Figure 1 (spheres, helix red, strand yellow):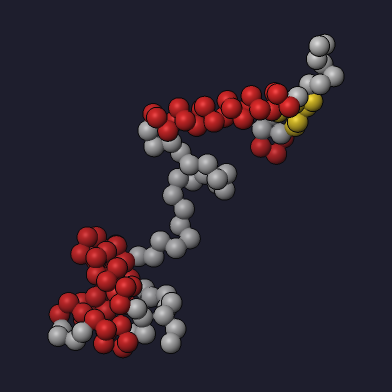
Figure 2: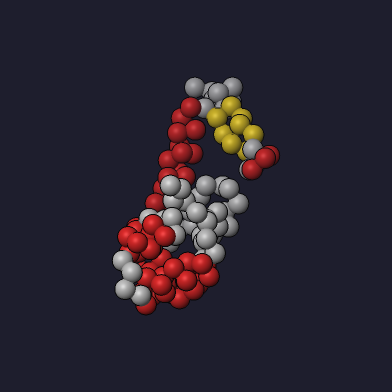
Amino acid sequence: MKKNNMRTPQEKKKIVLEYRNTPITLRAIAEKYNTSITVINRWVNKYEKNGIEGLKSQTGKKKGGTKGQGAKKPKNYEEELERKIMRLEIENSRLKKGYLVKGGGDQKEYVTTLEKNTK
């Protein structure tokens, strides 16, 4: 029994309304539509909170637009400071190891500073 069917918001709404408006048990509806009780409960909650908009799939949709950089935008001032501290600690480690990073993105270049040290 396959339980991972992709359904349209309209199909989900039909299932939710059938569950809410008929005396059929949740287990029977889950079996009828070849899905799980947990999934139907999730749809019911989303439908009650946000209507049909809550039933739209969020699979594969990214929020924030970081373009694959893996960095999340800080949510508040404290997170912003934590990110700044982390960046400075990384830079400090690089300097201790004897190299600088010049440029950014695809143009990033690692330059050693060991020859420049006069110690």
